[in-house]
Image (cartoon, helix red, strand yellow):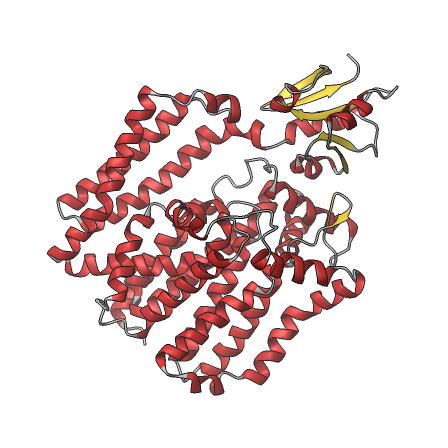
Length: 532
């Protein structure tokens, strides 16, 4: 039951959280061109879905694209239908899903221990580095994170609230179905393991009888299975490829595209959850010591959620930094519980622990600024277009923010300490978007390059790339592509009696024995030809 004080806090804090999401996830999402690799692939796949009218089999470059399930492509395709084939429409689903994930995290934190904890949880999640990046990019991971978070929230409130239990649990099964439609079996495995271990630890396995299993299975299958059935009937090879090779193979096979050691996600979590990751070890220690006596089983549920995701993906042979995004809401609530304790009690012990957690960040930030001042990263301008002066400016801004936050902590203005970290993240993002991104765009996107190439070749002719496709070029030209994977294939292509063109990077051009004619250069990409 929400009391009057909680309602008053909510009227003040919820609008702040919404404005924070609008700033972090929506600001300039339509001005940056689509970048190559993931963004280019998923944006082009969704665009092809609209143009072809085939909403069952996703395709990329004219071939079936089986690596990801369909949900994110459907949402992006609907955005294209509403707003046209624009960068804004391509990124709108991620911004909306990211905002939704923050709000669900707020609701879960509020359920566990009130509005203040809910706000802290949502604000911490919204301002963590990797969550910002993936809420502003055309990727599937944010879709999985949202529906897993929603499913676990619906289960938890169903577990706690007997009055609305049936409704919440039935909605829980629908969210599970969408999670599987977003990323495959992992969308079911993570919530199932989390809930199972939670009930086992609580000695409440009998609660399974109250979980509406019969109706739940029907709802889950009604949401998740139709598309998998339809694509398997239309493409008989799909089921073996996706379920066996992509999922089971990525978990068990040593022959994987993205191998990594068991400890791979320790540095990934520290970097991806920054700046809040410096408080995460302390938050976990405090949670395990049961320091938060007013939170009851809520903290247990969050610890199990966090642990399941981390261990599950650490055990898999295939590893990518984005895979552990579903643990970020749980990590945010754990750190928020710690901050709530600081703001509420400010005891000497917890202040000392905060000092030991944040002081290394201050020292490292100052050391990085000094190092970059004396040893500028000159090579980075050649590789990405970012100048050492831009890096120094951004670094100085970050250091000023971190030091300011630390000074607020030293003078015991803990609310300003928290606020200073939030403001530093927000303005660092704005500076990055306004100053750094324009320099990086020619290196990460092929928009202008592809449009020039499109004008030079006849209608219907394919774009040619050496070694790998620049995926955003397909989004901006509506053309297909061929890939010349060896020097001999490139040489034969350039020996054509007609004038032909090919896209190549500067580094790869330097390794060719014979130099073709360079027509245009943008960033690290060259358009070469066999004629002047």
